[in-house]
Image 1 (cartoon, rainbow, N blue to C red):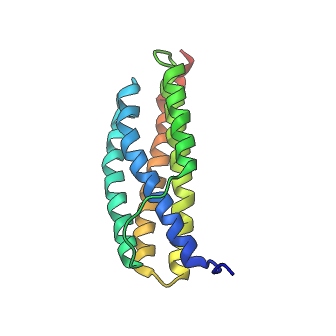
Image 2: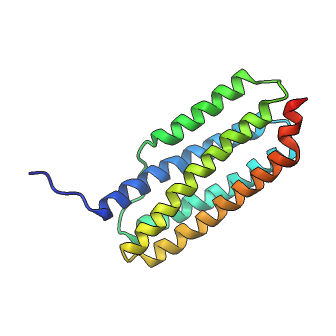
Length: 164
């Protein structure tokens, strides 16, 4: 009979999934920054690229806390969102709506990450990994701040420019 999987197995699997997602995001952010026209949006993507590097380092610390080697497992969710971003960059290249479409994809990424980091933090707490929970909370706070900044940018400038 197969061994029954427990919360610590799920935590580890989800950690691998998010590790893959962050590495994919790190690779994708420069493409997004170069595709958009808005200087503020370019700056937001550049800032988040630096934060993402720190988030990957935090995930590596979490792997260490649970006694595992950092390992990535293909994250189908992030692949779907980044594929959607590629499609928008192709279909809307040169159009007024490009920045709004790319920003919307960036927010889809943030929302995915916020959901994952919130879950991982809760599981870390339940498994008694308080140090890991604290690291995951730091990243969750950054993701929420990025999402808020993107919303403000969308409402203040980018969406109105897309109407033009």
